[in-house]
Image (cartoon, rainbow over all chains, first blue to last red; front, side, top):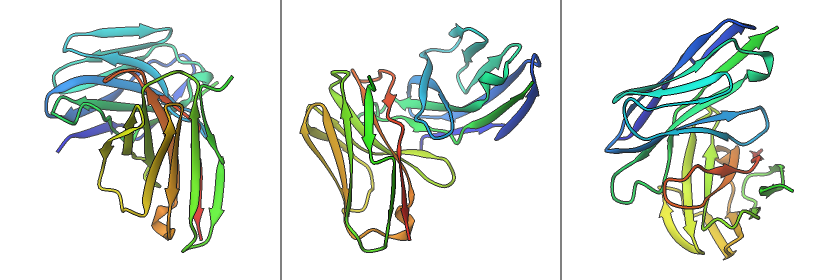
Amino acid sequence: EDQVTQSPEALRLQEGESSSLNCSYTVSGLRGLFWYRQDPGKGPEFLFTLYSAGEEKEKERLKATLTKKESFLHITAPKPEDSATYLCAVQPGTQGGSEKLVFGKGTKLTVNP
Amino acid sequence: DTAVSQTPKYLVTQMGNDKSIKCEQNLGHDTMYWYKQDSKKFLKIMFSYNNKELIINETVPNRFSPKSPDKAHLNLHINSLELGDSAVYFCATGSYEGSPLHFGNGTRLTVT
């Protein structure tokens, strides 16, 4: 069964204190791994897609990396506005599976000023 | 101009009632989805439609019936609501298979 596990469940950082969020997955043929940001009362907002091991993508203070079993979302010198829940999702490569995303529970990040 | 809009944002109703949630998109995407986010925060796919045709129907009770009158709309009708149906329901769209999804802001359904 396709599964995504994110850790930690919650993370508190001081402004400027860099850290990483983990997403480990088991999936039948990975077609893509997605990172989303979700603010309270809002829908998830797309951040990155990664397709193959070794791939990296960056956007402002965020960098996503991918290996064959996990992905990391690195946050460099975070600011309070980076506070949100970060969701990881995988797209299975099985027939009929590629139309859906399998999500993890998310990591709730709080950045204190 | 909101890309994916859902109505209502909040829905409080009693067990046994029938209710609908509406979703509209102005992105011109071919595929639309319904996802459910339960109290444990897992987002799980319920249905997907491509050009008004049902593509995915996960193991969802048949009290839930999606309807797509046209490419820009996907509604979700729920019959005989149960306590366990309480959750946040998200509509999403995608332009092609594997493309990033664009989500609406959700409908929080509370069944009492």
